[in-house]
Length: 125
Image (tube, rainbow, N blue to C red; front, top):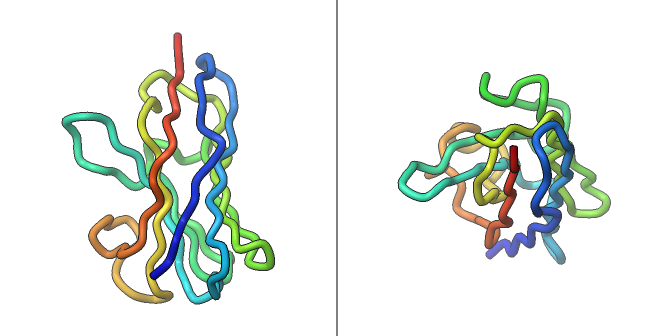
């Protein structure tokens, strides 16, 4: 079992930045590819970023490309999501997730067996 703990959400204005963190205490973090997803009520959970186990490859959907950056520090068992130029449509609960390295697809939520509790990000006009 992998426990993931997110932090860093909050209320910001459009155009601001936020950095989310996701810690996996006590695990061999480098065995896992990591992803960030978001969800709003009534909609499916969508991928916003993913990173492979080494940190050498990152993946983004077009909706956030150029604004969001995922990174990881395996020594600290932590993955980050830097979000810049935030828009009201980025408002959602953001989740980090883990899957065993090289398993499944980076953007497919059902391929991630381990999830954090979520952190709310609200972007006001």
